[in-house]
Length: 257
Ligand code: NAD
Image (tube, rainbow, N blue to C red; front, side):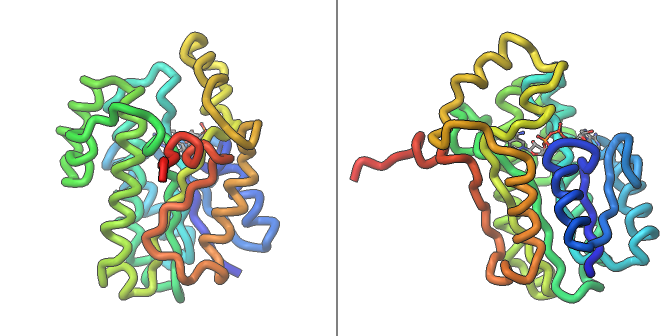
């Protein structure tokens, strides 16, 4: 059985992923702000380093898979810069810090949670995406604060997806047997989309989000995909961004052939 690390394990998709993996007999080390195994604030470099150190100690230095779910949504009154620090740098820096522990496993897998907003939300600030991909956190946080959380959110998730695609094929990842992939969920029913701290006016807009399936996704539906991408059935997946959105992306981006 494997040892998996899940950030954002205390809620929503991360908590559902934990339940699914534990039901399969695996060991899960959760990382979150509270209510899990490792308490850490992934919005700061110090918090990320502390998380990596605690996970390395708890895992005995061998991690079979890492799932980066920790994130802030755009509809709860959060500064855009803080959102960037958690959603992009909190994921990417933890993946890089845990690389030695992933290398010691026999064919490790990393799954980050991007978002279908990357292709469906207009007006994504490109300078913010490129600042993230350059690794310039100070500049990315500055732009995030300037543009505010609503455009910063898809920018953080687009940068994350492109980071996965860029890094996945590099010899120091796939050459060491570490597969990097992303999931781009559509609207999933979690505290991020239905919590008490959402701006009520903005939250109303979510009711108009088109989902051909006719309902929001459930966290366990994304957890099933997490389990698949971590496991032996997905060994051909490397640098993939897998959309699971009930048809939103297909509906909004039809080509008139
Ligand atoms: P959620 O709010 O239920 O869970 C997010 C978790 O991240 C929480 O437990 C929270 O404490 C943790 N977190 C936030 N800031 C943190 C920090 N600084 N350090 C450590 N942990 C922190 O949300 P969710 O819907 O389960 O979201 C999980 C991931 O999926 C997020 O990255 C989100 O952006 C992404 N996503 C969600 C949806 C959706 O519709 N719910 C859609 C697309 C993508």
